[in-house]
Picture 1 (cartoon, one colour):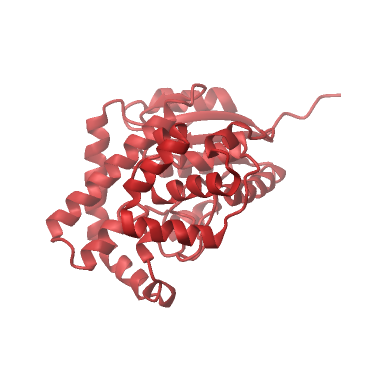
Picture 2 (cartoon, one colour):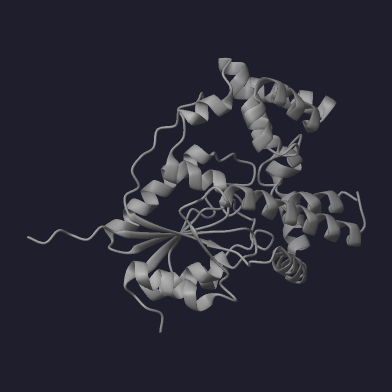
Length: 320
C-alpha cells in the first residue's frame, strides 16, 4: 500500500519591501495554494495602505488568512497568532492545498514553527505601571533596567521597542525569572507539513533601501495619510489615553504619520522619519533572518529563475 505524500508548505520570509506578497500570490495561484499572513501589522483592520496589505482584488484571487482579525485598539500576541495560524494551516492542508506562509514578523514565525514557552499571562495592572514608568523616564531607561535583569533579552530587543521591553519586564517582575530563560524552555510542536524556507531579499542592501523609499512614496500617493486620518477618527482611538502605545499605531510608518498629523514635524521630516524607521525595521529583520540557517536566499527580481527552480524542486510543479 502506497503511503500518502506528506503535505507541503512554503515559508516566504524576508525584510519589508522585498516582494514577498507578490510572489506569494503568484505561487498560490500556480500551486493551488492559500496564503497565511505572518505579519504583525496585517492582523489589524484599517491598516491597509501603510502596511502594504494585499488589495481586495488580490485577496479575491486566492484565500488569505490571518489578516484583519483585530481592531487597532486590540492586542494580539504571538501565542494567539501561532494558535490561529495552526488552525488555518490545518484547514488548508485538509483541503489538499499548499500552505504559503508569507511575512516578515520573526516572532510570529518563531512562535509558529518553534513553539513558545508557557509564560504567565499578561497582568493589566503591572503593564499599566510599567507604561506609567515609561511615560516618566522613557523607554530607553526601561530598556536599561531590562539590561540589568536580563542582558540577553536586552541585547535582542531594540531600545525603542516598547511592546517587547514591557513584556520582558512584566515576565521578570511576575516570576523573578528572565524572559530569555523562559524562551529557552519553549516546547516545539511538530509542524504538520514538509516545509521549504525561502528568504526573499535583494543581495545589495542599497537596493532594498531604494525599494523601501519608492514604495513609501507610492503609499503617500495612494492616500496613506487619509488612512491614518480615518484611524485617528475611530472612537476607540480618539478617546484612548495613549494611542501611540498601541501595537497597531506603533507599526512602522503609522507612528510617524500620527506624529506628523499631531503637528510635530513638517512633510519632508515626516517622510524622512518614516523611511528611516522602515530601514531600521529591515535591519532588525535581517538580524532574525541570518539565524534561519535552513533557509535559502533569493532576490525575486534578479534571481527569479533559480527561485522558481527551488520551488519546482520542492513541489514538482515547474513555473510556466
